[in-house]
Length: 257
Image (cartoon, rainbow, N blue to C red; front, side, top):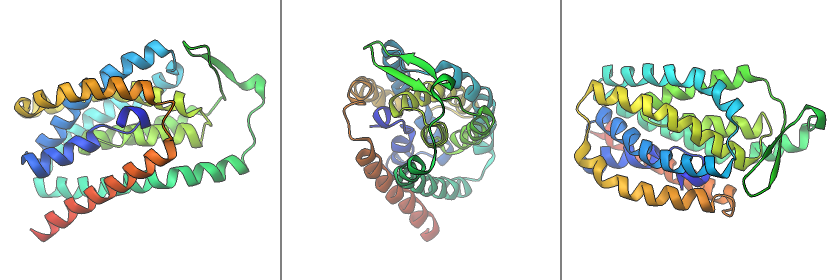
C-alpha cells in the first residue's frame, strides 16, 4: 500500500512496534525506518526499471532531505520518550489530514491553474512507452518542504514522501505515477541515512525487523506493479482514516497514562 500510494511505509510499522511490540518510541522509529529501507529499496528498483523516476527533481529534494533526516534522528534520541510519543501521535494526525485533504485541494487547483505552455515542459518516456509531460516548477519551495519532511521523518519516521508527493502533484502538476516513483526514490535514499543514525544512536531492534523484511519485500514487489491500476484517491482516503485513528490512539494512550 505504501509503495502504491507514495506514502511512508514506516507509518504502518512504527506505531505497531511501539504499541504492540512494546519498543521505546526512539527504537520503534528506528525499526520502522530500517524496515522501510528494505521495502522501499525493492520498490525503488522496480520503479527505476519502469523508468518513471524524475531524477532531476529527486536530486534537488535529496540535497535538503538527507542532512535534515540526520538532524531529526538525533533529535528523536535526545527527546524524552513521552514527548516523542506525543510528537509522533500529533504528527500522524497532521499527516493524515494532509492525505485526506490532498485530493480535494488537487481538484480545486486543477480548475484554477493554467497548464504551462508545452515548450516549457520536459518529456519523460517510461519503459512501457508511456509519455509524461513534466511542467517546469520552481525548485526552492520543494527543497524547503523536503528539508522539513526529512527532519520530520528522522523524528517520527514519516513525513517526507507525504509532503513530496503532495507538493509535486498539487504545486508542480507532476503526473501521479511520476510523483509517487520520484517520492519513493527520495525516501529510499533518505531512509538509509535516517536508519543509520538511529542504529548508531541505540541498539537496533533486529529481532523485530528481521521478521518484517520478508513481508515488505513481497509487498513492495506487488505494490510497484499495481500502482498504475489502483484507484489512488480511494486508497489515500483509506490510509488517511487509518493513520488518523492510529495517531489518535497513540495520544489517548499516552495522555491517559
